[in-house]
Image (cartoon, rainbow, N blue to C red; front, side):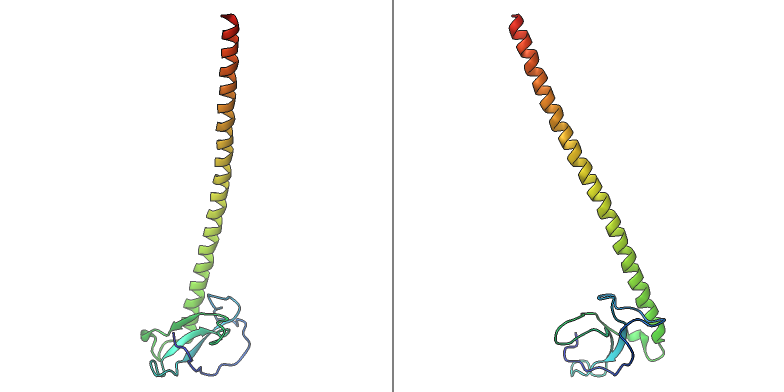
Length: 139
């Protein structure tokens, strides 16, 4: 992480505009390209959330710009890739929620089965005791 990094200026609102990806962490602001001003990574470009607050940690999204991106890399292509990643994460989240629902249903069914087994054992014991009492009285 580039702590204390300065940032290249950016303008506009925090919300997503056409073709801009929302931050994959907070989903409330767009991702912007900035430039590191640290001695360890001078002038190294990176992507971060507009909501990133270097002191309070409002949003922690941070990603170095890939070396292969170079100057010829279209910023819109990077943002489209981030948008695709965001959509993939949302789809994965939907799958997890659906699976959680199935697991909860199965857990509920297991509770019912356990209760039925317990009731069956109880009925079996009662029947056995009744049979023993009947046989005892006949003897």
